[in-house]
Image (cartoon, rainbow, N blue to C red):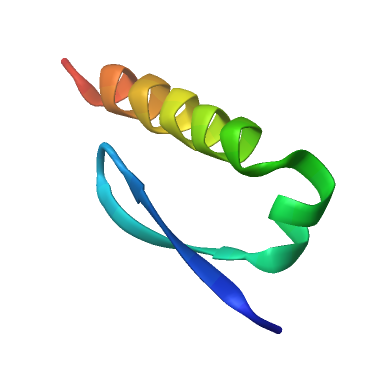
Length: 45
C-alpha cells in the first residue's frame, strides 16, 4: 500500500494512502495535529 509522508508538529509521519482518499489531506493533517497536541498536554504533570 502506498504511503505519503506528512510533516506534523512532532516530525514526519507515514500516513496510509487510504486516509487521504477517505478524509483528504487537510483533514488528516488537522486530525493528527489535534491528537498530538492533546497527547502532549496529557503528559504534563
